[in-house]
Amino acid sequence: MTTASRLLVIGNWKMNLDFVEALHLGQQIGVILKNRPAEHTDIVLAPPFVDLRSVSSIVDSERIAVQLGAQHVSQHDNGAFTGEVSTAMLKRLDVRWVLVGHSERRSMYHMDDEVVAATLQTVVQAGLNAVLCVGEDLAVRDEGQQSDFVSAQLRSALAGLDEKYAEQVSVAYEPIWAIGTGRSASGEQIRAMASTIRAQLKALGLAGTRVLYGGSVNAENAGSIVSEGGVDGFLVGGASLVAESFLAIIGACDGCYAGKR
Ligand code: 13P
Image (tube, rainbow, N blue to C red; front, side, top):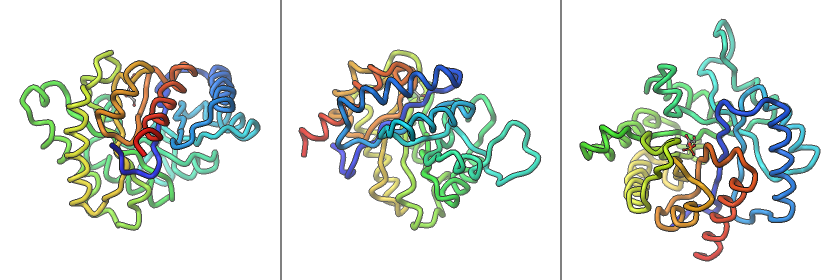
């Protein structure tokens, strides 16, 4: 089970919901959270860039206990980078968290290890929290190389990171074969990888970093994954687009945490 003082659940809306739809989902989440507040779990919503302002306004006006996250950010501070967004722009919108190196960015937008490391530095130096995404594809898993693969991703992104930034970093283990497939990793697979990740983080001077799991998490499997997998929370895709299922996942984390303490 987790050793973190609080769990963390992040809803990654990916490229879904326009700013009006985002407002509705934010409102629904707010209503449910008022009735069923999460006591041990930090909640982050990561909508598309163009929705950030509407989600931020509803979170502020309704005083909803969630923080804002972005799905990506440029490694550069400003300049001729068409289509990109900077950390300063995100901070102006009250964004506190940024996903770094999501597998969809790595595979579809050529975000290699070097860019992931540079982006992570930019994020923490800006005072934002980075959620470093790691995870192997099916071919690597079939060869039994997943621990080496993920450890290498961690070293490449985090080696040399000043320890003063340790508290701003979380790691999300998202095996690519489990993302959006309806086939989540088993509790045993997640537990084994969480322990590999924690050992690697310790070696890098980042002990205490929260380790999340992502990949086909839903209201039904969240409870068993968080207890059997020993993770500190979730990075949720599809199930975060429906208020009830997202809040059920948060409830499962919260209940598990309370039960184990
Ligand atoms: P799903 O929960 O839809 O599998 O997506 C996981 C993910 O990629 C979150 O970042």
